Image (tube, rainbow, N blue to C red; front, side, top):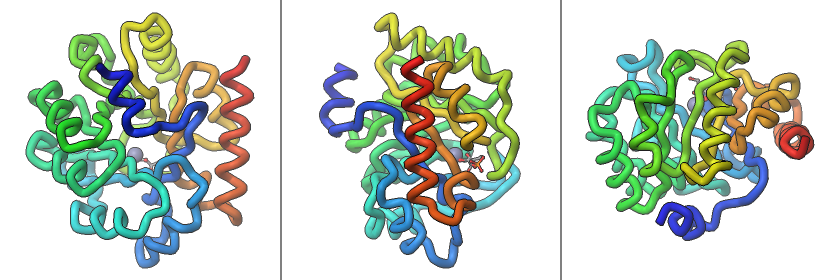
Length: 233
Ligand code: DX5
Ligand code: ZN
């Protein structure tokens, strides 16, 4: 049962903040992970220069981060052929591994492999990708990552036109049709997190808003408080 699977990994309740290492100093990844020790998940953007026009890091670096991170890893795979590569990230110990719906030929099989390897299974959709085509496979997933920018780069502006899709996902969870986290990624900051929380997101990725702040710990606390207040409205 999906609920049992979520419980089995002892997930936090309430809004979760996942700082994105994409905006961190790549020469000091261990220190940068420590700076966000009070976050809920540490978001790691894996890009292959094919699915997106940018290249970041891969499994050996994620394995190294996993060894030193005080926070569970949330790996966001912006790569082609996720069927082939995603299970390795789960085997490395990531808490949640998300693949892109647009890159998958068999999302159901990826979800099963990720869960079998002990991770939560995530499905990501780009801003222009509707949920309808994936409604039948989403029961196999624990996380739905709704991109609020085009994937590929940090520091872009939040796309509010995606919010109806967040609301649609929240309705499906509220009605009991799905049991998953609704995660938003891209352009989340103090000005935009409330809209995303009101729409029903419960996991918030923030790159530049956390690592661009003088005090990342304070930025995380402020984002969490804003999300909690907005989601109670
Ligand atoms: C973009 C990445 C995001 C990125 C978010 O493709 O998936 O995780 O790091 O960065 P900000 O929060 O700066 O938009
Ligand atoms: Zn991401």
